[in-house]
Image (cartoon, rainbow, N blue to C red; front, side):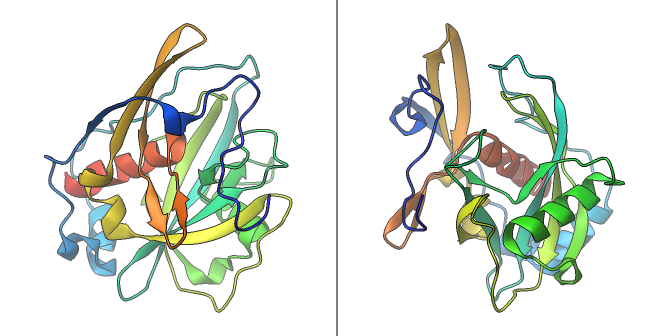
Length: 232
């Protein structure tokens, strides 16, 4: 897949999620205010013990593979208006190929924590230097339909002059304004029948210049939980 190809790669037989019926958009929910999106506000929120309820944590399983622990980095880039750095997964990958994702992957035996996994994977996948990352905390574990138990590690990231995507894992990089992702007017709900089961997911389509970045599934679910966490 080239850096300009933003199509979704899916295993044979899985329908294109962009064609699934739209069942709702949460435009009546309030957006997270700009004052709650500043670096200091984000640091303070993760330091608190305020109660909140995750919304999206478990997908219906569609594989017989053994569960695996994994972690992703949710990188909030410290620009004048904060952004979230996302990747387009390489078409060569065996799972979730071609999809929009956070940098991350399976936990290695030497990883002492989810944070270690997320930082190592981000460095290996996109060349993000750990020294440029300030970890804020974790969101709840998200279980994918492909049996990955994913810990999202949220962090502030100082912009680098350049990144170095691993072509075997990453086809493209892009950034989305944090304010866009924390506004439920951009949170679509979709559903469709597949393998005899009703499946539902969030999607947050983002127009990135000439490309529409289709953020959906696990990535959108974790972003939805970030919204719930920051709006609690």
